[in-house]
Length: 215
Image (cartoon, rainbow, N blue to C red; front, top):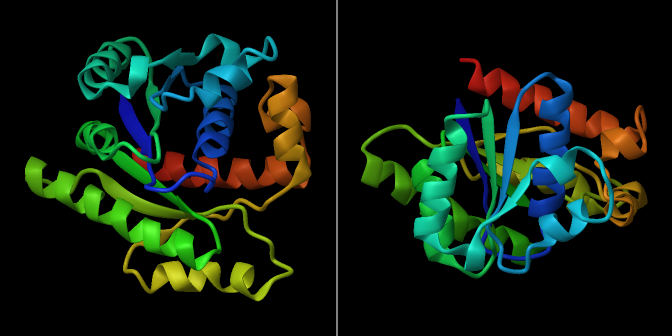
């Protein structure tokens, strides 16, 4: 039973996109998944409500992103599923800190903007603090290049920039129109456009995460 926190201190870096589509990939791999929407905006819940795909049966909202409720919901879900994914809010450090205290693995998405890199340092600091509080090597920390445009210099250099921050970097997720279209359909990319380049990227990311969890 594993808990994964998708965390960041800035909006717009793809946390919800990564959380929802990773959940879809894990479900396709045979795992039972609970997806906790801890952002008071409830973007994941709104996405799931657009259709009748796997998200509709997996997303649970955490009222107001309350840290105590998040802890209780995650612990309860952990008893019935294989993987609990937590989508954290950008502007509520207490909620993100709670998610990281619960997590076995922290995925920290980062876009190519220098502002995204600045915010990533804050998220990394929260994750390292959670380790210190727990007195362990958990959560394990991985960076996820997100919303990458390989046609730009910033996009091509993002993975290298992240590696210089001292943590391992997982397969990148590109900025693609298909990912936006999935939200309107209420589906994950694997349901909406199976075999597409966007789907293949999430397959690679899910396999990399699964390998970490199986160690």
